[in-house]
Image 1 (cartoon, each protein chain N blue to C red):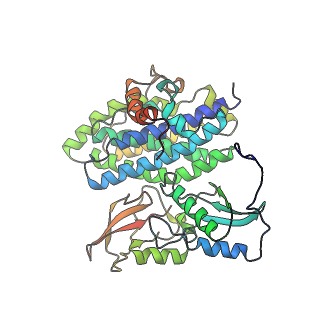
Image 2 (tube, chains in turn blue, brown; image 1 turned 30 degrees about the vertical axis):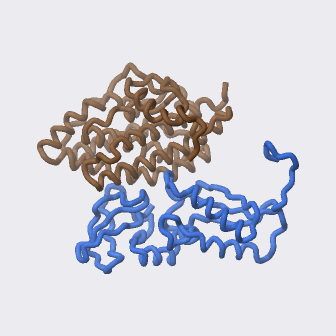
Image 3 (cartoon, rainbow over the protein chains, first blue to last red; image 1 turned 180 degrees about the vertical axis):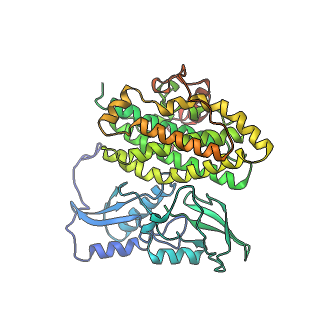
Length: 177
Length: 253
């Protein structure tokens, strides 16, 4: 019972239906990242798990970067979408371990990033090295590998800023982390 | 008295250092020497403020006295802050800013690597997330030290002048007190000797590449951030940072 409540009740609680989890996943596949609205929170690997606990949908999310300003917006969007889809009072759990990694971005997510003009993360995190060369990234506009890094930090903390030497367009690269 | 005093003090040290360094980086906002650096400074600062929130939220829970992370950040006085003396130093010119960032990043990365193995699950979780971000911070600041040190006559001269501005504050990075010793024995924090050796090795490597001389190891400094005894700069920084929440305590965004 929460402070201020006169009557303890859990109107939203109900037993799980066989179609619930599939419906919830489908709903969340339509919740887009606020900064890059072509890729969903499922494609980004932010939603880690869905199950049913104590009569409510239980969603496990993992925030991307420690300082990501979209974390609360994403959680609130997830909650709103699930409520609209008929899941009353979904329980969101923020799970820090294991830490979010770009390895969790799906292939569809990577393709959508590229189509949007953001070069997706190159390879997997296991091949990165500290103080080593920046990876050679293919330009998402013209496909040239003749690109150079302008800054390790781009429009957001998760991206770096590159320039394509051939078509002269700058573009964001989603860093491997 | 709280059973968790040692851990709380340590969490505040981590969180306050990240918060104050983030605040210092904000002071370059709109004034950085190049657009790419503007982006970099603000993004690094954002990462650090996010990490500070994680540490301070945990500290607030352990304190268990109804304070939350916001209260810890915006309502504590200078004497209650536990940040490293290094990060509260003024930004100075870009050489001082980069050097401060590098010395902090080199320490921060080693500490976070050790904390990722902590016996405290929450600490390990926060650290494992932060260590990936700080790897990028250190890469950037290390490269800038090299660029400025082994750069033009002007940049080299300024880097040489920057070293004595901040070097004496590095003594805190390589020594532990009794409280931290106890945490280390409990498996919560890494062994300070390991952190210190790795920090020194990184500094030696980058300074050599930047054609900068490594000064002698810093000796005892009369102030002590672990006891809330700060340099004259922290008070001014906090006055600016805390003014708005203190003046309008009920304001919401």
